[in-house]
Image 1 (tube, rainbow, N blue to C red):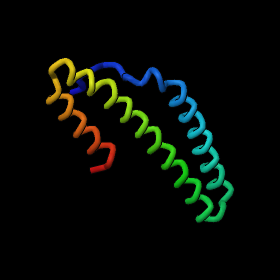
Image 2: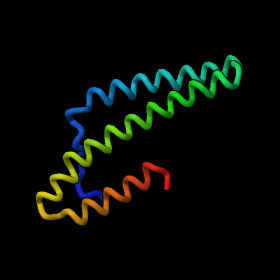
Image 3: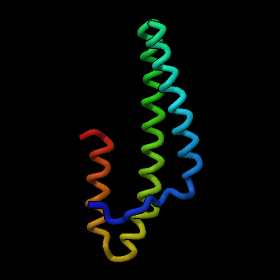
Length: 96
């Protein structure tokens, strides 16, 4: 259960949206490459770049979460709950 109902990434919101738009264009380009039956290693190279872009967005969001949500939770005396949520979030993000 989330401890907050809003993201604490307002300072990064425009950067995040720009990254998502760029990533959407990249994914559309990859789909076009498949449509054109481009050489597999070329497609995989672009796919790898898109995955790296998603991971970068994830790390930005994770940083914002720690700097704001978790820090605020600790300051409010709810550190254990926020740290438990942080561990679960990192495990999900890391795919474990």
